Length: 416
Picture 1 (cartoon, rainbow, N blue to C red):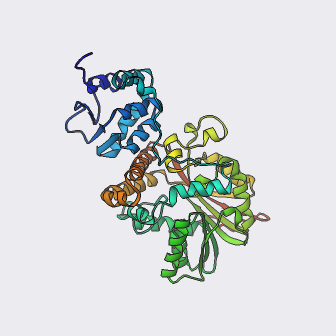
Picture 2 (cartoon, rainbow, N blue to C red):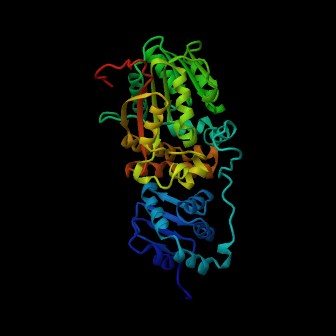
Picture 3 (tube, rainbow, N blue to C red):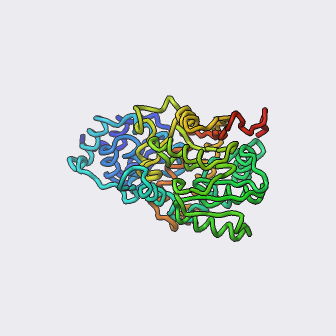
């Protein structure tokens, strides 16, 4: 109909009672004027992307490409993302065809930030490529995001915690207590990142620690941090796949935020290798994001793979495992599971701090990794915070022992 605005057409799909504003490229608008956030649809390609990849992936591609902007509260704006996901279908296609014309169906290339991995899934070479895609961006970017602790995993909060750094130190200390670290304990940290767990364990518990990562950027900075801390000879950081570690036995193994990269097909190998590296009575602390049972769909990898946006832009080949699957795999490998703790709400708090850090340093972040990559992270972190708050995603610490002849080495009532 001649004279009908984009907002009027879009209202037929989204409704008029929106919690946020929507500004369209023809100058029309939906939603309250004082909305906490406004989604700005800047180009017809935004509609094309949403039609061609219905749901979250299309919206995400449009945002990463700059066809859509989010002004204001990104958490409030993601409510509209959910509306798009629910409304995708024939009505959205009809709108795009009317507004854009037949070219709405012509494929658009995804933004170049989308991962394109080759080779066998979870082979050493492909895992290295996946890790490089995510972690080898810029150490300075991660410093802006994570703060001085350079810790990229769920922090542990208490009512009197005020800083992210204190919450991350509390997480490291909690893990050290669960592993019963003492002076001269030999610790292996799998997926050691920028070395924060290694530094904490060495400083606070006088352990001898080995950390392994397959990210060159992480390895280089962690090695530098160890030298600056005067811990050379006590802490060893290796550019090494966990499958190549062969210098056991260790007294304790920590794996913090690395397990998501292992893959369902490799769970047995992963836990068996760790079991072989531990001394009898040694402990494993596996800290990992997981999928609640009510969110798992399908069988095998279909029930564990991350959503399309995260899989293509953030964690290529990442898989989230249901807690029961993890515990069963650990015990089948010979471990005795002794303690499980959920930190779901803690991760939501951590992610909101990371979003605040990113937005407060937005221009510097864009300078480090580019506008599109910074957009990926803003969307990913905010969406993840909401997922943890809604119990669509979980995170657990699972403590297990290499029990031998009935001896676990655990006290009757451990005080963690």
